Amino acid sequence: MDKLNQRLRADLLKNPAIQIKNSVIWHMPVITYSVAFNRVKRSKMDILMKMMLLTFEQAKSVALPICQSCCW
Image 1 (cartoon, rainbow, N blue to C red):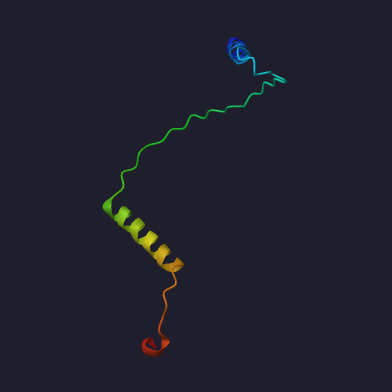
Image 2 (cartoon, one colour; image 1 turned 90 degrees about the vertical axis):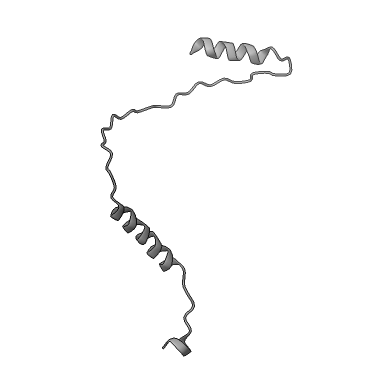
């Protein structure tokens, strides 16, 4: 990592218009998790039920105008 930092600094300082006023090095913690999973085969009924659920949710969010004079 030091070699990369030195090379970057040298490349930047080749340009006389660039001046490095301050340099800070920081690290980001990385956590890895091992997760096991199995693929689940979805049946046609599962897909149909999901499509119906999404349709009903969209219908709830869209308020349809109701004509009270002819529909009641």
